[in-house]
Image 1: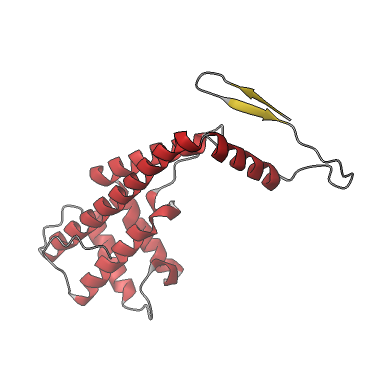
Image 2: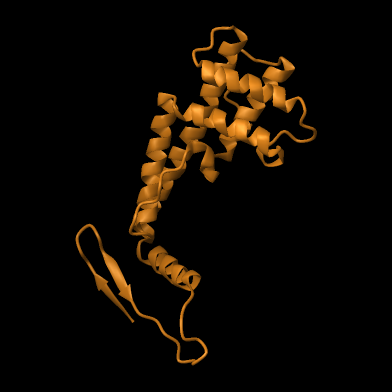
Length: 193
């Protein structure tokens, strides 16, 4: 049984569920979560569609801007005119660490110590205004989506901890590898990698 309350900005449903089987006396948290998720997806499908589209566009823009920023900083480093010394230092450290890494140089395959350095670079990238602005927008849209499922807003994670943005981590690794190998391009290559 369920009762719908259409309260202005907070429409919600009170729900009761039980089993006629004596050995099924309760629902697990996962079971309740599944019921809520299914109902939410059915009830708010149209309202959420636009938000999901915006969130995807926002994610793509964030990845694009972060890639552009790390590429620009790498080019500045090659010219010895880097405007972000903290990122420059971490990228140099990462390039040195990649020297010892055998096999695929992708975030998922790196040792923990190297992943930590990659995360530190990504967190420094988040401090750049253009990247922070994009990430703020994505977080706002993610919050809208989650508000359909949860009453309390999710805690904002650092960019390096948001699993949706592993592409940024891999872009950082690629640029550090270019530094290590001395393969820095001074052109604005927009090709997706």
